[in-house]
Picture 1 (cartoon, one colour):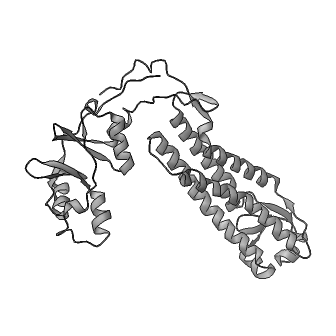
Picture 2: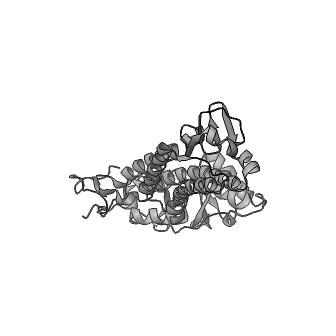
Picture 3: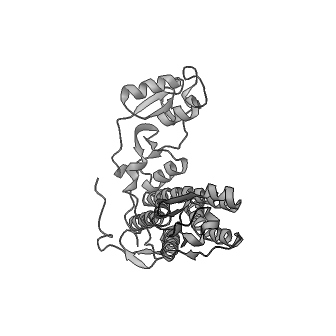
Length: 334
């Protein structure tokens, strides 16, 4: 499927830009940014104003202020980023790739070696055609990346709620038992009622025994459970944000590493499963061994959460692209 290829000349080139001489100080650049109300300046050299690169407000903070260097004496060249300018006949995909690979927002546009403006990575997004339909997946959709973003985000939020928020709030637990059967384990008197082992404590009617107390009374396995409960909470939060971030980046054609895409949310799956195993080990080590049962609702929701996280990680295999009927004739308006 061949779609129209767009060039930099098809973009609305921003001619309201600022330039700064290569001999100027970083303080001069900061003052000029403030005066013009812009976050970037094109760095030029000599009377011919040869383009050397671009200095951004972020570069000033990251490369100069954060390192304790003197902005009055440091040259703009020391803090700018070097990027090859594009011309009006450069494909939009090439301009986008240059900015994406350097993780920058602006690239200079030249014509006959004369600066005519700048274009931003945001200008390029809607002009980048999908040259190939995504044929991997089960559900046909027009825009696979947007569908994957919403699918992955919903899966991650549901998984975090079911496997972490509900046990944290004590709504569900991992294991349950009768208080009369757990007196020796919990170190409490015979009151009666149901005891549920949640994320950080054992809870019952008017009873809350933190795992730290169980560690002091029954041994280090309960400290290990407490530590892994904290790791489960942290990994769940990080997994939620990593899935939302990477799936959103996909909609903008921004590259993200396989560690944040796969390993980080995969750790949440591991900690959910391992939490159940640790509880089983803890009860098996108790003497006398308590009468305890798996919370069926908690186990079901944990399994659902792990499945949801795995689906979010492998969202590329859920949706496949279909060609819109007007795709061959439509053009992106200027």
